[in-house]
Amino acid sequence: MTLGNEDLANIINGFPGDSIDLRPFDKVFTQANIKCWWENVSFLPMTWNAAQDLKTRWERGEGGAPEEGTERLSMLVSNYKVGAKRVEEMGSNKNILSLWPPLVLRSKI
Image 1 (cartoon, rainbow, N blue to C red):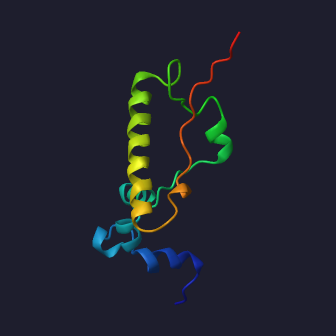
Image 2: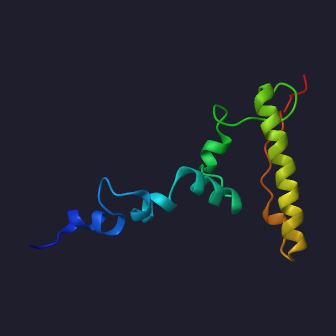
């Protein structure tokens, strides 16, 4: 009997049908855990192009995001301010948290 590359996944993460306690990778890397880790390090999983695309971004202010989005943006901004304050209290540069949701721009006629 020999072990091959196809056996590696079973060696690392257990076999199909094993309980979750015997599958360490599946136990640790759940969607909820990953999102929590992202939140802890203020990770935003999108590229700069997506953040600037008018189809995917929401803007703050009148004529910007829908009502639900406006509430979420307000919570984001307030949480970001709290995070910046914590970073400053820890002795780091609070300006590292300088990405803010854009405001609606109105052109003057």
